[in-house]
Each structure stands twice: as C-alpha cells, then as structure tokens.
Length: 69
Image 1 (cartoon, rainbow, N blue to C red):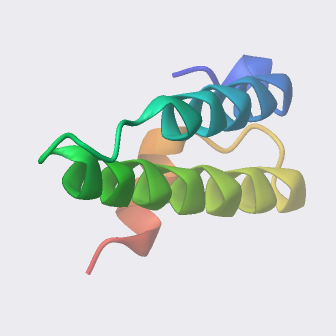
Image 2: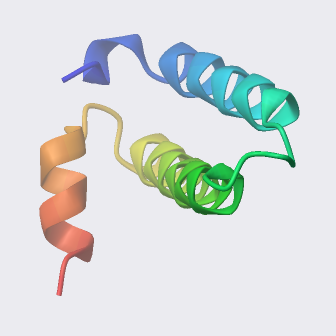
C-alpha cells in the first residue's frame, strides 16, 4: 500500500490518468472501454484521497473493504 505516500501519490496517479486519457485514439475500438476504466479509477482515487484526508493513515485495502457491498 502506498498509504505513507499520500496525498502526493494520489496527485501523481491523477496526472497519469489524465495523460493516458489524452493519448487515447478515437480510432481504436478499445478506447471507450479503456476510457471508462480510467474514469472509474480516477473516481476511486479521488474518493480514497478524500477518505485519507479525513483519516490519515487509512490503508487503501481498508478503504476498498469499507466501500465494497
């Protein structure tokens, strides 16, 4: 877990997701699927950052268990 690197790890991940999304080719049949996956990852990343700011030290695994049905 990269918990000890938060929130900078979250910001790096956000930049990486944005960069990947900007490079997707509309000509590729996989673009919509990959874009949807990256958007989900961005939302999860943002939610984890918010939870981590409320509870510093929160492990990603704990966060995922808490939000899983």
